[in-house]
Image (cartoon, rainbow, N blue to C red; front, side, top):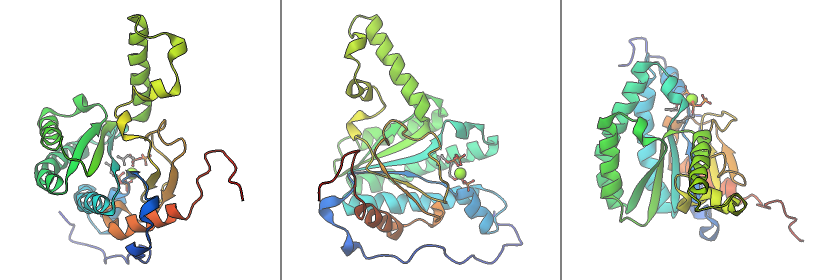
Length: 261
Ligand code: IPE
Ligand code: IPE
Ligand code: MG
């Protein structure tokens, strides 16, 4: 609930929206990953006593960005929704986040199907409370045939955990005599990550101005372009995504090589 002494609505910090027509459809990032950060600060800025109001407002951004991504032609959207480390937050916040997640799943399934979007999850889904896990699994099942875009929701996700898990799977194969250590290449390793079929992100966006990756997709972002915006996640909309894509398209990706004149 908003507190009585609600502060004045702060001025929007968002950059001037650029026209979508400037996007080069031939050079769209295929896979966009987003660290959705700044919900707590947004709530504070808007005079709410609880951070939860920021998480609630953040869901509107998720809905808008998922739909916009599919419409713009992005093939994979990875959203960092809850990290392994986020379990260490106060119990009340964690419980509310779980409830919001369950509500989102219930509400979003229709729109995902309407927009032909498939849901997959990266992370330790077994960590989630049963009432959330069941809802998540239902949406995964209900959207499995959709093809326009894949929404990769990262839940109870930690990249170091993902890498350790991959290592264990490989060790198991070696123990069972199905693999020898010299056959382990980076391609073989990548196959053991949660969703290798999604490929590496081309563009990683982090909202709220923080300059860190917070244990997100460490293996996969080796050559990803990084875009950090001061916009807080609950304020992030289609025009900010467009701005990030335009910035991405102005860059030269060299992958360690020299681009000949
Ligand atoms: C991101 O917003 C949402 C989650 C990590 C679940 P935060 O809750 O981290 O908001 P800030 O960073 O404290 O503003
Ligand atoms: C990263 O944000 C995790 C998610 C967006 C889900 P955090 O707010 O948890 O990261 P730190 O603590 O600022 O690094
Ligand atoms: Mg944060």
